[in-house]
Length: 111
Length: 114
Image (tube, rainbow over all chains, first blue to last red; front, side, top):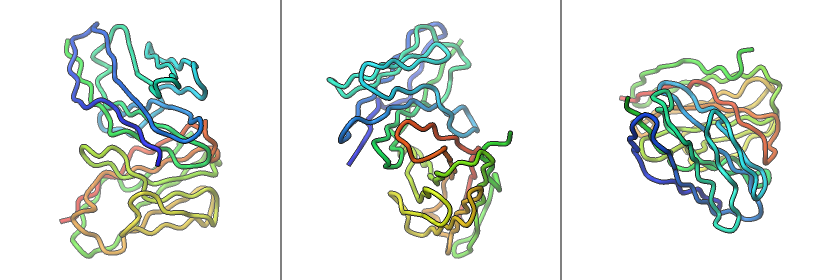
């Protein structure tokens, strides 16, 4: 079945550091790919998405590029802030099947 | 615009008790789903619905029932609570079941079963 693998956390960075959270997927066909973010005590919200190969999703300084050849959708940000501390989930959806999530990566940014 | 509303926010049950977690959305979304979130496990799908009157099982449906009598509401019932059901539960909705659709999540219900 479809699956998402993302790097284990937690990740701890200093403010203004570069962030990469790796995400790879297995799916039949051509799924849509998503990054969701969960701030402390809240539900998940969409951070960005890409629906076809080579698409780049971007939002709030975060970026991820849909790489079909490496089945990857790595999340990057050039300069993290304390307010970016959260749990980040990579997810995919193929056809009409339900959304499939990775296990999440907790990011802590220290001043 | 309320979005996806879950009640209650917190609940403590004793083993064997039953309860219903409520979920309502005001966006006229056809697709609704329930997830549970456990440490180190990410989000796992319990049940989902593609429209009123239609439900289906997800990855971890045992011990849970759902029904969808209206577009707006998608309650999750625990028939006989067990400690293994201690978790945070999230309801989500999207416009349809389409591949590119964004899912909108409620704030969650934190459930403890003693």
